[in-house]
Length: 315
Ligand SMILES: [Zn+2]
Image (cartoon, rainbow, N blue to C red; front, side, top):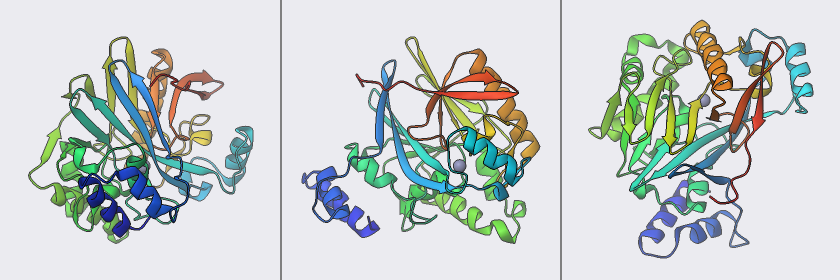
């Protein structure tokens, strides 16, 4: 879907014409509406919707701590094709009371044709971007906040941007970036400026909304954060980028990715959270785990294994 179609669809929705139907007609030439890549499930009193933005292939050349042969072997062991394995890009909508909280916002089409589908899937889930009360950023990489801005303006015009103060500070300090990382920096700074005074920074473990607490997971970026949701007897840890290539990093947690700002710290954080998720039998939601990105974690040999979550038939 082109951005113009999306804007037209959004305008149509505000006139009461029905956002999902109009959007899908635009996307599919008026044919049968696509089934959105949106999956609802309950966490106690909260409803969480996993929303897919698309996928990207992350090959062995982007990873450290494993060679191509080792990568191929782990992919084949997981019944995945090492040449094409698609790492998902997921975001999560949390509906709790009057709040509609987006955790991350996809790429916004800044990263190629296989991505940029979050607005369509959000529309398919029946949500208008203007309804979003908070955009919570796990970190400020383009696959997480590229979609927060559309043509220089906030895609979520009424949302407060909730982001770690450490993360904000890191991206605002020009001295942290070499020539190769100017593009990432510009996207991050563009997002911070588009939300302007609607910025709500947090530090450490903070309850950012009732039942939703931030969890520092540093290394991938300095302020990279997860969010623990608790409601009734249920809990869910949205752990963002703890794994980028699940078939590789569950089996071999020390493997890091070129985008890690501090790879050693990222690996330490991954090891710690995998241990905790397994010990506490936590349900986790991952940005780059196969859509809808939900699993429990269990030890397996020298590493771990993800056990796919059940489908929530009643959400
Ligand atoms: Zn990511």
